[in-house]
Image 1 (cartoon, one colour):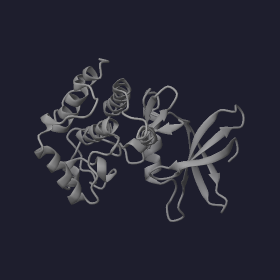
Image 2 (tube, helix red, strand yellow):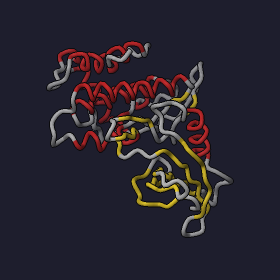
Image 3 (tube, one colour):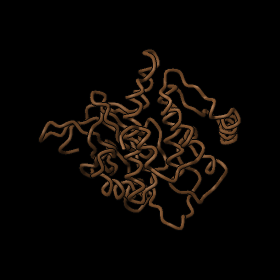
Length: 268
């Protein structure tokens, strides 16, 4: 694509491949997300249009990845493709957590900082009427040097309204899916994102996913078993008591206010 030099493939998002690339005019490193326009579709796929629209609205948020440009190009096969140009982040939370499995616990202050940034980013999305619906460590990009965290991959995001709209329940990765969605609900709101936030928080502490079901039924069984084991008696090794309390509060469903998570992170 004119103006950019692809350097390497770094992953795949919900609806496209992602490359690390260099902008020829400036030498700046960016991320290119390539979306193929299928022949049987008229114009740009709705998922891509929705992601671009939402990203343009949210890009000024400090904890949402910035969309820099949108370009059209041709693939090697001569097919029309759309490129979304993003700021480049050199890792993601999934890789960050994995790197600590041989190093010991993630420092509590680092957990607090990452959780604060995640809560601020989700609050920004919700404040603009957007449900992410696919929050997971892989979709949280990071700068490893500064531990800056930004929300990415809004291919499944939706605008929501009050009263609550009807949505599909086939959303987001199984391990981070809220119980009401697992049970087939199509009327849901911001709580589904906050459930994912709680699961991510637990994963930062334990360095493994909290609920690892292979099916919707097994996922529900894992969740119900967790509840029955008395949340208040949970003890995570070397984690500060305020972090444990925050996990319990979110999992138990006290999701009405953002002030408490911010206070618990010590950055209200």
